[in-house]
Image 1 (cartoon, rainbow, N blue to C red):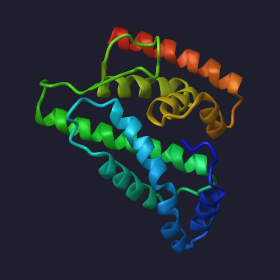
Image 2 (image 1 turned 90 degrees about the vertical axis):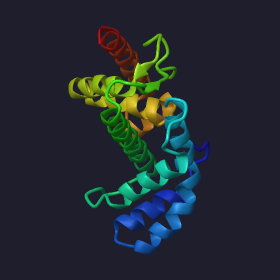
Image 3 (image 1 turned 90 degrees about the horizontal axis):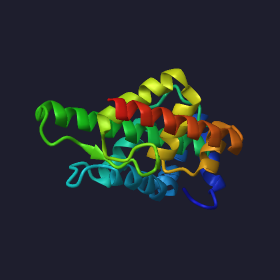
Image 4 (image 1 turned 180 degrees about the vertical axis):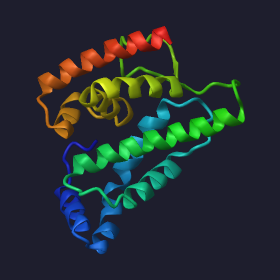
Length: 188
């Protein structure tokens, strides 16, 4: 995420939510590079030779964001948080399609280096996603924190800002999430 957020992004999101379609045209160039960084963070955890490219992931996520009619855009952080969630969904859907085509062969692996200490080996993307979904059902805020940090590449401070919680609370939630995911992934 950028060190100095562009206030124009929030302004354009608010204008777009208000029905100004030209704001969307101005928004894309401002968010494109940051979306590419988020996409690269997602793809870095994918297996070597992944067939989905960064540009395709960015464009697919942006198209899905544009189709969100029920979202009232409020901030830059909300936009990038939802973009990261969209990218996660796209990659999981891609992994499921690939797995259904190759039942059992060449499992898709991701590095869990962002959840240091939680897992000492690679974990299958679907297995991780299933564990995260179970955790989100129990602890929605903490699950969202994991998603923002792991998939979105946000720092603990940035994720706390998106979730509107204190950094201390985010750190506690992060510790609980890591421990819970470690237990689930080693049990699976």
